[in-house]
Length: 168
Image (cartoon, rainbow, N blue to C red; front, side, top):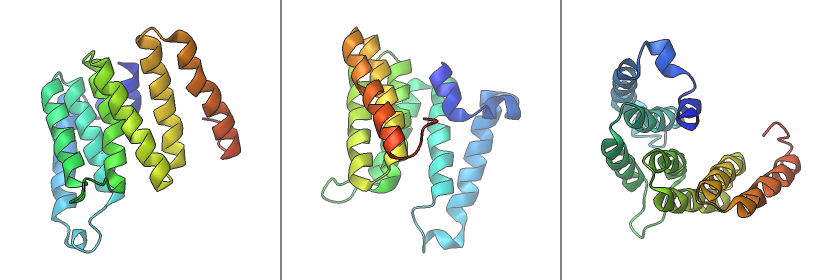
């Protein structure tokens, strides 16, 4: 649960409950989607973050299958006609791995985070690669691959220092 709470950044305590946070996210998403500039700038990072937080909040609220379905809908929204993913899909895949993890679907979580990492690298979203690699390490550890779990951790330290992100 700590992983999911970290993604939400303490929003449920500020909202009073997960239900209140869900309502707030849904209202904010409707407002963001109705803005006129969405036609000009369809990949709104604020909207992307709201949607990512909402998918995790659904999972926290015990709506695991709904969270997965919502996540899938969001990812399809940012998938091109030839199956190529657009940048906002990255921010849906990484939380989706945590949702699968929470539902004890480790293999699916593993596949989701690997796809997310691959996409991040391709699109140059390097700090997100670090987070994805940490998630990958947790999933490998949970699968019983304790030694293998240390490989991404060691690689992360080197990569974070190379990117001048030592706090990661």
